[in-house]
Amino acid sequence: MRTIPFPSSIGEVFALGLTYKAHIEEVGAKETEPMIFAKHCSATVGDCDLSLPNEDSLWQALESLNPDIAQKVKATVPTMPLMLDYEVELGMYLDEDVTSEQLNQPGWMPRLGLFLANDISARSLQLCGELAASEKERMEYWTLSKSLPGFLPVAETIFFPETLSPDTFPDIELSLSVNGEQRQKDNCRNMIYPPKLMLEYALKAAGDRGLKAGDCILTGTPAGVALRLTAFKKFMAKILPAKLRVKLALKGAAKEPNYLKVGDVVQISANDLGAHCLRICE
Image (cartoon, rainbow, N blue to C red; front, side, top):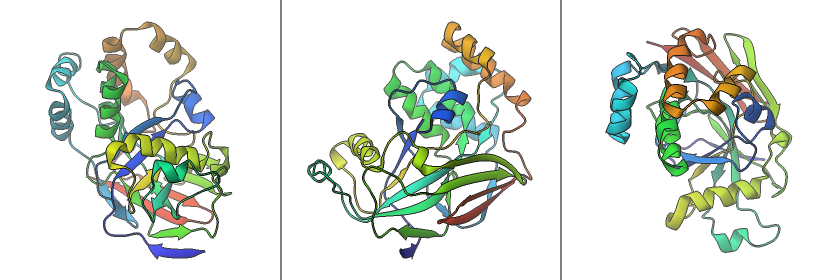
């Protein structure tokens, strides 16, 4: 297996959401197609600290995307909680350009490296997307919530398997703990979508630009994130209007103990891809 250090700069980052059945269930979603969004932030390579974004930066980010929705949220809640969440994920690093013609060839796979990542999110910004007018616009809030500075910590090494099946991910077990308490654990082979299909989704999201060497694809996270819905919350989410759903979710954030806070230590690992430690600080 060939290895390289994670590069100091990468191309675009395309991320898939809702790729494990148990995670789909815990957030009250439906198993249809994966959510596709981007992360517009630089990777932070190796063990690191993450300074908590302050409330002003959250409001500024929301206003920069859509001032009207920012005003609606401000009229609903007095303060904007951070709702900082973690997501251990398998990342794919493209070592060559990828075209639709190549992907249409049976059995073809590009040169791919695998790496370990933590897809950090400000869930409050993501939830504000419930007020968006369309699904496409809602994904812009997923991107916003996951693109703040420092929100892509990755392990130091990219691993290139000798062979990578287009139909099955390798036997890699992902694990995440917070302050020594295990929160997430699952095997990459349990993902709903195979590697080649994920490449097709990413290529579609890339549009005319296509997929280039140096681009990265995050493949989704297992169950166990801080954002989760009880059976009652799932029921209420189906009947309440979007504005009220957002209001209740933001106001109820303080009652969820699993969101990250100052002093927390997040450790992720994978049996073949090493480990990474993230410390939350002021």
